[in-house]
Figure 1 (cartoon, rainbow, N blue to C red):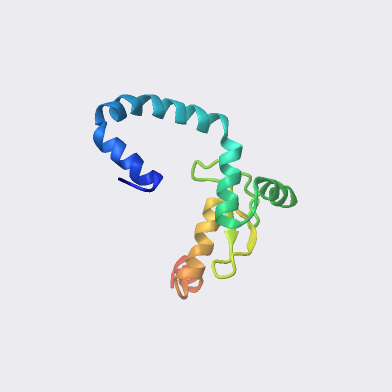
Figure 2 (figure 1 turned 120 degrees about the horizontal axis):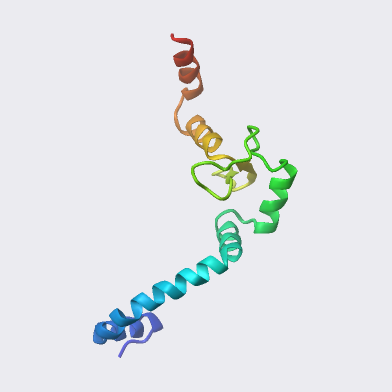
Length: 127
């Protein structure tokens, strides 16, 4: 007999596939309704789990930045996103600010591709 809840659930799913199949469409609707009505709670949980800051701190950073990207004057997060990207030090986890998607990608290139800034500058100058 399975001991853990996960084991018991798995056994139930294996023994009753018809019930699981009948429930899945309803679950999808219920889940979508919950997600649509709890966007702030979901965002808060993700921020806490990923960066150690909540939605309150995120909104404070955005206010301090004047509602724009920390690097450029854009007030659009970009890439069809609702929120700016949280820029953080990947070693310490310290949050530095909020960036639009373009600035976030540019900073990532600076961190991951040695000499990228110099290559990009040379490229633009036609060297």
